[in-house]
Structures are given as structure tokens and as C-alpha cells.
Length: 264
Length: 277
Image 1 (tube, rainbow over the protein chains, first blue to last red):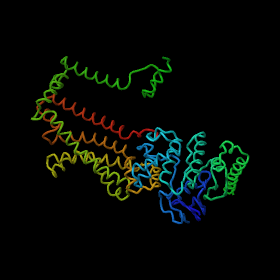
Image 2 (cartoon, one colour; image 1 turned 180 degrees about the vertical axis):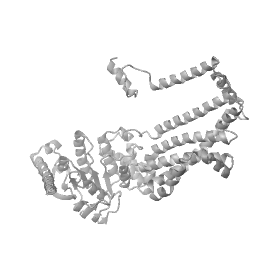
Image 3 (cartoon, rainbow over the protein chains, first blue to last red; image 1 turned 90 degrees about the vertical axis):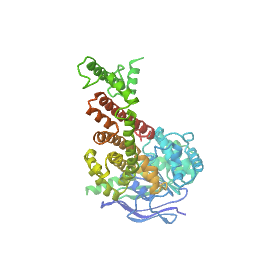
């Protein structure tokens, strides 16, 4: 059963003649980790904003379990690139924030928040202030906060884009562990090709002008990691490198086709 | 201690141009300036360079201060005058915060409210409050009401404008984060917009208190039978210069204390402000 469904979605900024996204169709179901990969300007952030309900499509239909998406809701949890945590609350209150909004009693929401912090490996950080955390820790809190509200799907907007390379590797592994444990469908956007190939069960490659899907791949590197293989072994596997280079060449062939078009 | 250690310590004490030798901290320089001024004051009066009628010596002002605090001047002690002034500004400030913050939120968050209220506030804000004091006196008489109303109007605008600015500059990512956690519009205001705007609101209160205090004292100079401004004004009419000087010093001290108190409050209430966030 497909959970999240996008049917022939187009999107346009008000006042702009060029669409940012044209004719996008995709589904996201249980046990899927769908990664949208693309250069800047390919409309991947717009795609995430549409699914989150922050903006409305100019054409097409987005449904979650058959119910049309109208505006943001707790069903679709979002992890942001620049954490978007509330600095006036401590870590525990931030993670429990969604439950507080839903009117869950304090004891219960703090119990859930503690479980979520344990899930992202941040036990013992409950009473820290947000500005005392490192970039990676903030993203873990953001992930725990989104998960605590128990969304149907998890949307991640370049969640590791602002992190250094070492932290990013750790966070990718953490995400795979969390995804495996919670079994939430995840939609993640990134411009990091290696990250996309490593994490995705399903990868869509977006090209700009207007944003469209130019390649769909079904991958299993993330599952191999979940099955116990080490991240470095997977990323240095010839098949991983081959896939990465294939995606890379796709991006560049798209670029040069575009430049030819511009010259013509 | 190596020279490296010394310069590292100097960096910590905040100066931008870092001398390698340890030098006086800014606070000490300010204190020394204050003492120098006091010394000059004492010197010019002790040597008889300036007559006590124009500038009484510090000792006389201190003595008068003691007298004012215990027996009083113009039927009331210094504390009663001070209390009258503080009572007026406290009332004005209280009502201003209660009304200006909701108005500022409305201006910042709602297009129609902005259209209605913004021009009104921008119209009366640049008018010096003393310019409309006569009108307030005609409408409300010379009692307490007119003075509290004047202070209220002087404080209202800075707080409303600062609140609106704070609301308008709320991080959109935080709003979206709360929305995708299921926040309603009222919850957004309560949990995201208000705390985000709090640093700006406190800055507005600081500016408002400064304006309000100077307005109050000026208003008391013109139309009052109690308060620090009245005390200074009536003392001046009888050339009781030491009371005038003392009154001015107390007015300055109160303004300074309010500023420092609010800065401390700001540090306590919004510790995240100025952090990398």
C-alpha cells in the first residue's frame, strides 16, 4: 500500500512565468527511504515544501493515505537544514514540543522525549541549552523532535548539508539505524551524491529548468548497512562507486545538454 | 607568565585592539573619570572659585540629601517625591506593556492591523510628548491621570514598534517547524512568535523607559505638586541650589538604575540572545 502519493505535480512561484517543478509523480511507502538528489535550482526544496504543505502545487494532487494534503500537519514531520530548534527551551522541551502542542500531559511527553533522545544517542543531554550543542547534536535533536510527534512520514530538508564531513558520515549511519528501528518512510533531499546513493532505497534525480525527474534508481546500500556491513566497506565497494559515477555522469550530461540548448 | 599568556588574557577581557601589556579595564577607566569629576567639583568649590549659590560643594549636597531623606522639602521627604515619580512611571509602564505588546503583535502578524495602527503610531510617535501635554491637561485636568497618560503614550510607541519588528523578524524556519508539529495559529503566537520577539520587546521597554522618564520629569517641572521634577523646579525658584543639584543626581541615578536593571533582566530572560542562534 502506498502511503504518500504525488500525481503529476507542478509548482510555480507567484509572478514567475517559469515553473520550478513540472509533472512530478512519485510514491513513498513503508520501508522506503526516498532520496531526491539534484543540483541547486532543480526544485528539490520546493518539492519538500509541497509535501510538507508549506506551499500549494499549481497543478496535480498530493495525498497521504488517500487524503489530500492541505497545509502543514503533524502527520508529516520535518527535519530542517538549520535545525529550527527553539533556543528558549532546553533539549528535552524541544523534543517534547510537538507533544506539548498536541496537549499530551507533561510526564508522558517527557517520557517519550527521553526515549527519542536515547534513539538518537543523546541521552544525558536533556537539560542542555540549544546553543550549547554542536551542529551534529542539533540535528539529532531536530530528528528526535520530529520523531517524537510520531509522524506518518518523515521529511528531511538537506539535514546534513551544514555539517562537516566526519559528522555527516556519522549522521548518515545514525539516520539508517533510526530509520530501521522506527520503520518510518523517509523523504530526504540532498545535493551530496555519495550521501544519496548510500542512504536511498529509492533515488530520484532532479534536473533544473523546470525541475523534473530524469532518473529513478532502486538501491540497496542502506539495507546492506542495516544488515551489518560497515559504511566504509559499502562506500568503497566497486558497485557503490559505479552507481555513484553513473549518477554523476547523469547530472553532468544533463548540464551539458542544457548548455547546448542555451547556446542554440 | 609568557607574553603569549598575557595577550590571551587581554583578548578575554574584550578589547578589540589588544595591547600586549595588561592595561586598565574599561570599567576602571570609567570609575576613574567619575572620581576625577568629583575631585574637580570639590576643588572648584573648596577654593571658592565658584560661589555656593551657583554650585554648592559635594559635602553640602550630601548633607542636604540626608536632610531631605529624613525631614523633607516642600512638605514631603525625598522618598515621597521619588515614590510619586516612580509610581507614575510604574503605572504608565505597566499599562503600556499590557497594551503595546498585543498591538505590536497584531501589527507584525496581521496585514489589516498593520494598515490601521501603523500610520497612527508613526504619526504621534515623533511628536515630543510635552507638545501634547497641554491638550492632555485640558482633557484630563492636572491630576495624576494626565501625567500617567502622558508617560503611557511616551512608552507605548517604542514598545509597540519594537514588538512589531520582533514579530516580523521571527525565523520562518521556526514557524514552519512548529506548523509541521501541528501548531495552531494561537500556539504559534504563544510558543514561537512571542518568545522570539522577547529580546526586541525588552529593547523597546528599555527605550520606552528612557523616553518615559525624561518626559515624566519634564512634565513634573511644568504641572505637578509632587515628584522629583517638581522638587527640582520649586527649589530652583528659591535658589536652593543644593536641592536642585541633588534632585538632578537622583534623577540620573534612577535612569541609570533602570537601564542597568533592564539589561540584567534581558540577560536573565533571553540568555540565547547574542548566542550563535
